[in-house]
Image 1 (cartoon, rainbow, N blue to C red):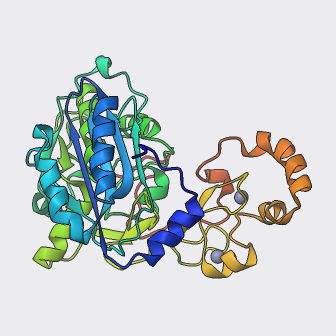
Image 2: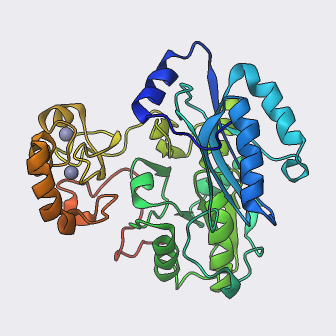
Length: 358
Ligand SMILES: [Zn+2]
Ligand SMILES: [Zn+2]
């Protein structure tokens, strides 16, 4: 069995759509020490490919982070296969709230330097000295009292479409930037109670340790992240304090938590929270676009990109050379790109350079 996928993306997507069975979208992560991540990766790949699992799985010397989909009929076997590894003992599995089973179309498993690309020097602070874990219900109740500071540790394109009421959502493109911004924004609030949250809880592990190292002494974090929170709220039939959509890094791009749309189309300003990548592959910008603008711009972020997309191969080659300096490695929209962005989104927190009223 090959240990890597080599089939064309288009074929894979068609195959996924034609599947006669249901898949469950789940996620799991754990920090542990691996002597040989490559060996472990190959072993897991064999086991999970055998069960026809799809997903994006990162393995590092420090543990595993997996977002994946498992065929319903193999789910029991999958859980048993986890049990065969001591390091997965009692690992919490988070189930997607809004799941069409089409979250991934292939199995991708990579060995990385780190689980979360944080650009941090882990030796500089104690990564095991994490904040206090709060259950979804504890977090829910604390968020409702106004004397605490709720901090979204995700990137700006994630918090733009959904966040906890009253949360501070820094305009960061990366996790590294995010940590620096939070530390700066809250430098006068080192003894306040901080309530951190992220998608599945993994980023909060690092963020809380980082903030504690920088002198914050009451750091708390949502255990299991928004995914766990959404599940609990649904089960307990409580009104969600998270408004909008939870951004997810798979084909679904986001799952709605309370049905509210809090973001706007970046081109016309209409209410919309659908992310997409610009159809001009030279640009590939991640942005929010409504259906009307999608039609007008042919799924591109601008007229310029639409023209490039429709150009001939020769034209493209010329443009590719001319455009590379302009597009560079732009992967998410920057402030300057935003033609329209409402300044008064409901419950919106602080933006960069604008200190929150605490
Ligand atoms: Zn629009
Ligand atoms: Zn574009």
